[in-house]
Length: 495
Image 1 (cartoon, rainbow, N blue to C red):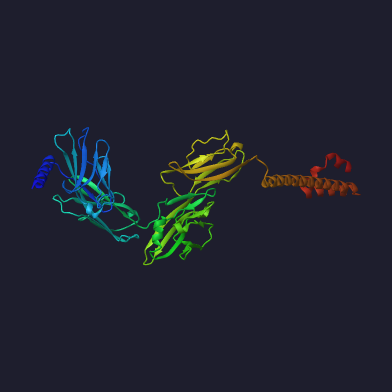
Image 2 (image 1 turned 60 degrees about the horizontal axis):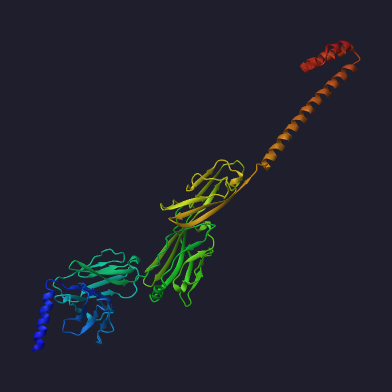
């Protein structure tokens, strides 16, 4: 009877000291760690104690102002309890640990003990199926509160990106994609206070990597495709039918071809080995057993431009696919890389396709003091008259933020003007023509001189002057102006 009266007084004291105060609600799953943090006054000397369910139950832990701490020896609690200051920590909480916790502080500085109550409520979170999911698999997530509460809490699911998704009575269903891989969250709201219960959803997908790569004939080529090793091990149990690489080439400034070329296929027998279907000089990563399916080469080539597709096909038709587009950066020198001193040259740095807005290029001329560039970020440079200082290596680099994507190099050779073969041919031809003209002119003159001497000889040899005169007259008539070649004095003397 005496003990009953004491218990009644204690209960009345508790109710009086906590009148108007609400329990601190905590939601948790089995296996979680829960920390109960009280908000007591701060007297100089005090003593605190934790109880479960009511004040008549054995204590869970205690502490005093001198730093002393004790933990219950009860087998149901001692493996899971610890004290951090006044706070009670329950590690790996079990089914039997859900319920009401009472914090009590006594002090000579306080007129009455300080009480604060906490209530840990079980939340059940289930995921179906619990194993690794493939893209387009159905996912079902359920979040329920284990006890009836006067004010029913609201439940909302957040996806791996932290966005709200459709939730009905704590249930969410959807078909997953690679973006659903990660931590989902059940948000339970009670008395305007939120509590988040995380759950891990694993969807088979390739590791994050750039979907656009750049290379050049002076840079390396790496085409990424990998899966986390732990997921790769689980994928092997999903009835993989085929793992392969396909290539869809692209001409310079042209569209990507629809006709794919198989590059590699993976033999799924142990040990895993790649079979080469086309020799493009690419090499698979050596650690394929860890899920690294990437392709590499020491140097890029101009015909590397195109789309590369890494795919894993499962029995039943589901396909896990990753596409990486490769652009090849090159410098085009017009009219060529060998220039004559004073000649104009155009340098174009291009991939054959427009660059994204966040990608820019930079020019680096030969390291000579006489060379300067008005615009280091222009895709095209024009040098009106090249000089000896322009000879050497010109480099063009692609940058995205503070990351260099790739670079291309061209070497210009500047030479002094000199006679080429055509100039020699033209000069020699001109000289030959001039010589021929001189020879023809001399030949014509000599023929005329010979003809004059022949006519003079005929006149001198004639026996009859009259005949000679007639002959001369005939000659003059027959030859027209030829008569003017003979002086009058000569004709007179002959006559």
